[in-house]
Image (cartoon, rainbow, N blue to C red; front, side):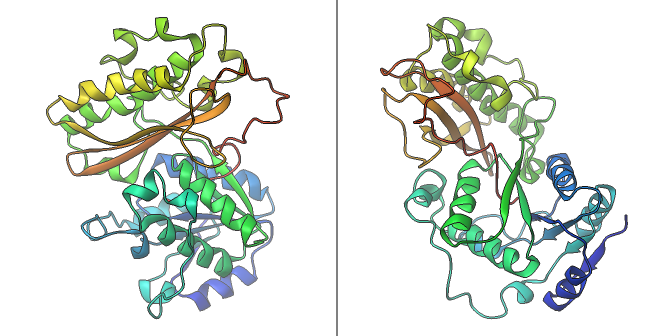
Length: 346
């Protein structure tokens, strides 16, 4: 399929008018990689044989702060259109900044308390910029469904909350994290990493793997082999690695899980080049508040770090057993995981 390329809001409106439904939107900032292909294939599934996929490609200046990589963020529209064509997209909306922000953006979307912690604390501008551009795209495209990747779990949760709080008539769906063969989560920013920096960065998925192992079977399972140089594969970290059956009598609490992850990250902090940790937290996926020692249920382990000049984020979902005992599938207090039914751009 050769997609229609719309560069203006008027062009998008004309293309949208002829699209058969359901219409599924994939918002991106371009520089599409294999992780985006996973999202595009999920969108194609949701559109069903008779529906349409719309992909937006826009490097959103509103979500970049001073000194961040707005100017050097990769822009590869020709290759992006080729990927969209291969994955069955009907329309690629690739506007200039003047189309998305014809005047100074005076009104933005506040992310609230959930957007002021973790990533929101480190990048105070970020979530307001993301939510604002996503809201604008939802209004312009009027999709039935919008699909995002699960790597940006906090962003995913905030987009869901925005659509619920503002009564938007769109379903938010998700696609799983894709990991490269060495375990690093696929990201457009991975292209910034040198070979040595990438070696250091592999401590991030190793840390998640060690934490998942600790939550599943207790500290005895977490030793040098769990956090050492061996790379993790695509299935080693994430929802597929954990579930109710993973929590047994030896399950441990948040402190031990965090300690297992921190061991891998501390070792990488002494590497050359070093990994500089921004945050490492176990959070309640319903609120993104850090969980306490008695917490029982699904939790998200979230981490952000910098290697060289490249900022990386990652997350894993796991189950914790607090003092209330082992959680069950019928436990009505279990929070809904942030990564199971929806997610964010880029």
